[in-house]
Length: 199
Image 1 (tube, helix red, strand yellow):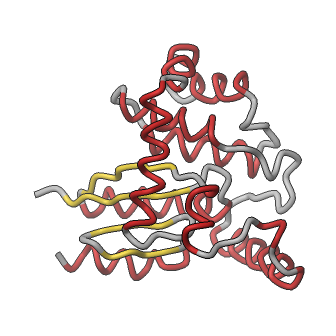
Image 2 (cartoon, rainbow, N blue to C red; image 1 turned 180 degrees about the vertical axis):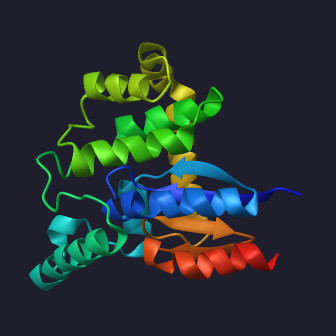
Protein backbone atom coordinates (compact mmCIF):
# COMPACT_ATOMS: atom_id res chain seq x y z
CA UNK A 1 0.00 0.00 0.00
CA UNK A 2 1.32 3.43 -0.98
CA UNK A 3 2.32 5.71 1.86
CA UNK A 4 0.59 9.08 1.69
CA UNK A 5 2.09 12.34 2.95
CA UNK A 6 -0.13 15.39 3.30
CA UNK A 7 2.12 18.40 2.79
CA UNK A 8 0.71 21.69 4.09
CA UNK A 9 2.56 24.88 3.22
CA UNK A 10 2.40 28.59 2.64
CA UNK A 11 3.72 29.47 -0.81
CA UNK A 12 5.90 32.22 0.73
CA UNK A 13 7.53 30.03 3.39
CA UNK A 14 11.36 29.97 3.26
CA UNK A 15 11.24 26.91 5.48
CA UNK A 16 9.14 25.05 2.91
CA UNK A 17 11.69 26.05 0.27
CA UNK A 18 14.56 24.71 2.38
CA UNK A 19 12.77 21.46 3.17
CA UNK A 20 11.48 20.71 -0.31
CA UNK A 21 14.42 18.75 -1.76
CA UNK A 22 14.71 16.52 1.32
CA UNK A 23 10.97 15.85 1.34
CA UNK A 24 11.13 14.86 -2.32
CA UNK A 25 14.04 12.52 -1.57
CA UNK A 26 12.17 10.90 1.33
CA UNK A 27 9.09 10.36 -0.78
CA UNK A 28 11.20 8.63 -3.43
CA UNK A 29 13.04 6.43 -0.96
CA UNK A 30 9.90 5.36 0.87
CA UNK A 31 7.68 5.05 -2.20
CA UNK A 32 5.33 7.68 -0.80
CA UNK A 33 2.81 9.90 -2.52
CA UNK A 34 2.98 13.59 -1.58
CA UNK A 35 -0.34 15.39 -1.63
CA UNK A 36 0.51 19.09 -1.85
CA UNK A 37 -2.00 21.20 0.06
CA UNK A 38 -1.29 24.94 0.03
CA UNK A 39 -2.91 26.70 2.98
CA UNK A 40 -3.88 30.26 3.80
CA UNK A 41 -2.18 31.93 6.77
CA UNK A 42 -5.18 34.27 7.08
CA UNK A 43 -7.23 31.23 8.10
CA UNK A 44 -4.59 29.16 9.91
CA UNK A 45 -2.93 31.80 12.10
CA UNK A 46 -6.05 33.29 13.73
CA UNK A 47 -7.34 29.80 14.48
CA UNK A 48 -4.09 28.54 16.01
CA UNK A 49 -2.52 31.56 17.72
CA UNK A 50 0.04 32.37 15.04
CA UNK A 51 1.20 35.86 14.11
CA UNK A 52 2.24 37.26 10.73
CA UNK A 53 5.96 38.01 10.62
CA UNK A 54 5.52 41.78 10.82
CA UNK A 55 3.61 41.45 14.10
CA UNK A 56 6.22 39.29 15.84
CA UNK A 57 8.62 40.72 18.38
CA UNK A 58 11.85 42.17 16.94
CA UNK A 59 13.86 39.51 18.78
CA UNK A 60 11.91 36.75 17.04
CA UNK A 61 12.31 38.41 13.66
CA UNK A 62 16.07 38.75 14.15
CA UNK A 63 16.43 35.13 15.25
CA UNK A 64 14.46 33.96 12.23
CA UNK A 65 16.99 35.65 9.93
CA UNK A 66 19.90 34.09 11.81
CA UNK A 67 18.35 30.63 11.56
CA UNK A 68 17.59 31.02 7.86
CA UNK A 69 21.22 31.93 7.23
CA UNK A 70 22.41 28.93 9.23
CA UNK A 71 20.13 26.49 7.43
CA UNK A 72 20.97 27.95 4.03
CA UNK A 73 24.67 27.32 4.70
CA UNK A 74 24.05 23.92 6.27
CA UNK A 75 21.99 22.67 3.32
CA UNK A 76 24.10 24.51 0.73
CA UNK A 77 20.94 26.05 -0.69
CA UNK A 78 21.00 29.66 -1.90
CA UNK A 79 18.54 31.93 -0.14
CA UNK A 80 18.07 35.68 -0.17
CA UNK A 81 17.27 36.60 3.43
CA UNK A 82 15.34 39.71 2.45
CA UNK A 83 13.93 39.20 -1.04
CA UNK A 84 12.50 42.16 -2.91
CA UNK A 85 8.99 40.71 -3.12
CA UNK A 86 8.49 39.43 0.42
CA UNK A 87 6.03 39.37 1.97
CA UNK A 88 3.77 38.81 -1.03
CA UNK A 89 0.17 37.69 -1.22
CA UNK A 90 0.39 33.98 -2.04
CA UNK A 91 -3.21 33.11 -2.85
CA UNK A 92 -2.67 33.18 -6.61
CA UNK A 93 0.42 30.98 -6.27
CA UNK A 94 -1.47 28.58 -4.03
CA UNK A 95 -4.33 28.34 -6.50
CA UNK A 96 -1.86 27.67 -9.34
CA UNK A 97 -0.34 24.74 -7.42
CA UNK A 98 -3.78 23.37 -6.55
CA UNK A 99 -4.80 23.65 -10.20
CA UNK A 100 -1.69 21.72 -11.21
CA UNK A 101 -2.70 18.92 -8.86
CA UNK A 102 -6.20 18.72 -10.29
CA UNK A 103 -4.90 18.42 -13.86
CA UNK A 104 -2.45 15.63 -13.07
CA UNK A 105 0.57 17.91 -13.21
CA UNK A 106 3.54 17.97 -10.86
CA UNK A 107 2.14 20.13 -8.05
CA UNK A 108 5.12 19.45 -5.81
CA UNK A 109 7.68 20.51 -8.41
CA UNK A 110 5.68 23.63 -9.19
CA UNK A 111 5.42 24.56 -5.52
CA UNK A 112 9.18 24.29 -5.12
CA UNK A 113 9.77 26.33 -8.28
CA UNK A 114 7.50 29.09 -6.95
CA UNK A 115 9.32 29.11 -3.62
CA UNK A 116 12.69 29.27 -5.39
CA UNK A 117 11.44 32.12 -7.57
CA UNK A 118 10.66 34.14 -4.45
CA UNK A 119 13.64 33.20 -2.30
CA UNK A 120 16.45 32.98 -4.86
CA UNK A 121 15.36 34.66 -8.10
CA UNK A 122 13.82 37.97 -6.93
CA UNK A 123 10.57 37.26 -8.80
CA UNK A 124 7.15 38.55 -7.75
CA UNK A 125 4.97 35.48 -7.22
CA UNK A 126 1.90 37.67 -6.77
CA UNK A 127 2.17 38.72 -10.43
CA UNK A 128 0.04 36.50 -12.71
CA UNK A 129 2.48 36.98 -15.59
CA UNK A 130 5.33 35.68 -13.44
CA UNK A 131 3.25 32.71 -12.29
CA UNK A 132 2.40 31.86 -15.90
CA UNK A 133 6.10 31.98 -16.75
CA UNK A 134 7.08 29.75 -13.81
CA UNK A 135 4.41 27.22 -14.77
CA UNK A 136 5.64 27.18 -18.37
CA UNK A 137 9.24 26.74 -17.25
CA UNK A 138 8.20 23.66 -15.27
CA UNK A 139 6.39 21.67 -17.94
CA UNK A 140 2.90 23.12 -17.69
CA UNK A 141 0.80 25.03 -20.18
CA UNK A 142 1.19 28.27 -18.27
CA UNK A 143 -1.76 30.14 -19.74
CA UNK A 144 -4.13 27.21 -19.38
CA UNK A 145 -3.04 26.50 -15.81
CA UNK A 146 -3.41 30.15 -14.83
CA UNK A 147 -6.93 30.15 -16.24
CA UNK A 148 -7.73 26.93 -14.39
CA UNK A 149 -6.48 28.47 -11.14
CA UNK A 150 -9.17 31.13 -11.34
CA UNK A 151 -11.99 28.61 -11.14
CA UNK A 152 -14.23 28.79 -8.09
CA UNK A 153 -13.59 25.14 -7.24
CA UNK A 154 -9.86 25.80 -6.94
CA UNK A 155 -10.45 28.66 -4.52
CA UNK A 156 -12.79 26.42 -2.53
CA UNK A 157 -10.05 23.79 -2.29
CA UNK A 158 -7.64 26.38 -0.91
CA UNK A 159 -10.11 27.21 1.87
CA UNK A 160 -10.85 23.54 2.50
CA UNK A 161 -7.16 22.64 2.78
CA UNK A 162 -6.69 25.47 5.29
CA UNK A 163 -9.65 24.40 7.42
CA UNK A 164 -8.59 20.76 7.18
CA UNK A 165 -5.09 21.69 8.31
CA UNK A 166 -6.39 23.44 11.41
CA UNK A 167 -8.67 20.49 12.21
CA UNK A 168 -5.66 18.16 12.02
CA UNK A 169 -3.50 20.27 14.35
CA UNK A 170 -1.42 22.09 11.75
CA UNK A 171 -0.43 25.64 12.71
CA UNK A 172 2.53 26.55 10.52
CA UNK A 173 4.47 25.90 7.34
CA UNK A 174 5.77 23.50 6.32
CA UNK A 175 3.85 20.74 8.05
CA UNK A 176 3.98 17.10 7.05
CA UNK A 177 1.19 14.79 8.16
CA UNK A 178 1.54 11.01 8.00
CA UNK A 179 -0.67 8.42 9.63
CA UNK A 180 -2.31 11.18 11.68
CA UNK A 181 0.95 12.52 13.11
CA UNK A 182 1.98 16.13 12.45
CA UNK A 183 5.62 17.09 11.91
CA UNK A 184 6.03 20.87 11.83
CA UNK A 185 9.05 22.48 10.25
CA UNK A 186 11.79 21.36 7.89
CA UNK A 187 14.00 20.86 10.94
CA UNK A 188 11.74 17.91 11.93
CA UNK A 189 12.39 16.03 8.70
CA UNK A 190 14.79 13.56 10.36
CA UNK A 191 11.98 12.51 12.69
CA UNK A 192 9.60 12.37 9.75
CA UNK A 193 12.00 10.15 7.82
CA UNK A 194 12.05 7.68 10.71
CA UNK A 195 8.26 7.67 10.86
CA UNK A 196 8.05 6.84 7.16
CA UNK A 197 10.56 4.02 7.60
CA UNK A 198 8.76 2.52 10.57
CA UNK A 199 5.55 1.51 8.81
